[in-house]
Length: 197
Figure 1 (cartoon, rainbow, N blue to C red):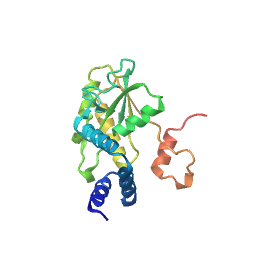
Figure 2 (figure 1 turned 135 degrees about the horizontal axis):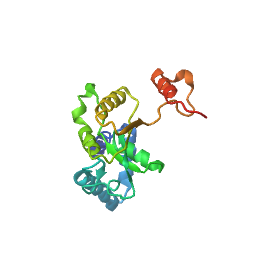
Figure 3 (figure 1 turned 90 degrees about the vertical axis):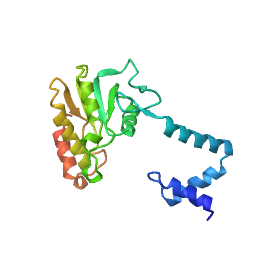
Figure 4 (figure 1 turned 45 degrees about the horizontal axis):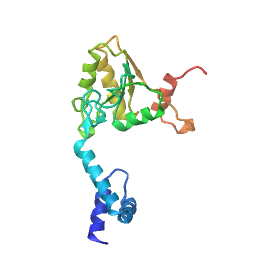
């Protein structure tokens, strides 16, 4: 294999979810692209990495000091949805069902990976709650062990704001799942979050 092709494949494999075969397929596609398109792709990636900022209010990705969500006057500022990563924010936004504000933690508490509460943007969230404008915090983080640890830590920190209602997104059994194969924690959440039909 060409050393140049091998180098490109090695770099592409560093991306999440990209194995050797996919990297080779992407490299061959890039080779078939016209040089202007490849230059444009390379420049876009470099500019994105060098010029992207984090919103000073919610920690979302932005080109400016404030992201488009935080600078939108039509958003409901009395509600904040707390998510782990920017990708989670985008997933919720794509539903078109939520019109409040967000707060991106930047991960979850994971002692095994050396990530503690001080590594997350929890203090920034608490600073926002001090304004008294926020009436509800919706916690929308994963149901992993690390997510549950983060949830319990957040709940303990948010007790300092008794006027703020704290909720979590519904957790339970997914559509099409068979009950016998669902883990106990998921079944517990499903029972706790049951509703009348």
